[in-house]
Image 1 (cartoon, rainbow, N blue to C red):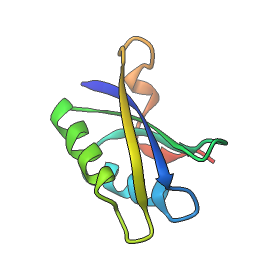
Image 2: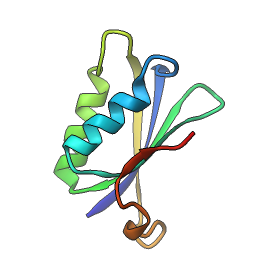
Image 3: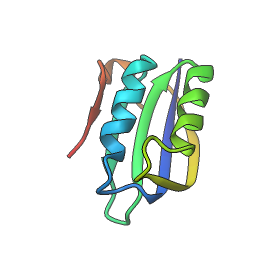
Length: 95
C-alpha cells in the first residue's frame, strides 16, 4: 500500500471534478479524500496499490468529463506512518 498527495490544477473547480474523482477512486478501490483548495487547485490524498494509483492519475490527467481540463497534476508519496491507512475507510469529498 502507498499513500500519495496529488495536486491538480486547471479547470477543476465548479465542474464536478471532486465527484468524478471520488467515483473513479471508488471504482479502483482506493481510499482517501479530495478537496478544493483556496488557490483553485484540488488536493487528493489517495491510498492504494502503486499500479492502481498510477492508473488513477492517468485517468485524472486525461479528463473525467468534457468540462474538466487538467493543466498540471503532481504527486508526492507520503510515508505510511504520516497518515495511518485506517484513517481512510473509504474515499470521500471534504467540503
